Length: 238
Image 1: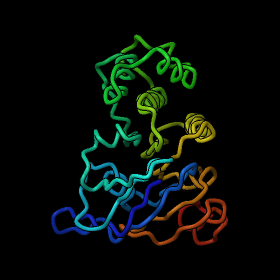
Image 2 (image 1 turned 135 degrees about the horizontal axis):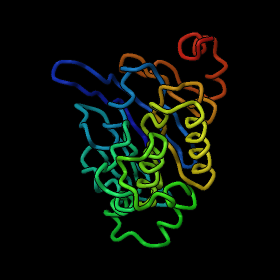
Image 3 (image 1 turned 120 degrees about the vertical axis):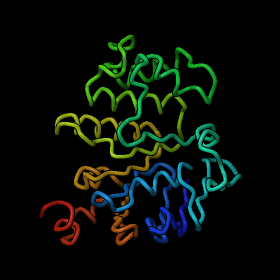
């Protein structure tokens, strides 16, 4: 569904992303893991068009379509229309708007939010329905993360890209968020997960790529990487 080939990203003279390549197949959960500063978020921002690579290719293959799309030349709002949704690091919800207004903004590129769309999100996140008239800035961190995910789901994504969804959350809330990610995957959503919590990410990922200093240094099946002595020493405290 998504193919990233040899992308290179620079911040002025700093070579931040170095020949990074990876693939996401339809129906998978693919994780990008690595320490803070490894280049995970920059890689995701490059995929979603917030940063343009100096070289390399990013190709999107929507399911059951013959068309191939070059994402390096496409504005982010067009990507949303084609089924890619990005839940950014730090949630980036509209703090002064209500929960309901935030969700309605998630459907903006598809037109007006429908009752069916809202009901679908509220069924997934009952707490958001309870707080739909509440100003988003007054929500807890976990509730804000649920809102960011719910807002992305309003666009009916084929590929959902999550950037550090566990950041700043308590262990109990982290487990809840990862349970929701697994449920979304089971319901048919393909997921690209950027996560510093390598242990949780590898538990649910079909495949994973390890980034270090802007390079992919290891890749493989999630369970195999979790069992790797090298990965355990570097990222899992083993």
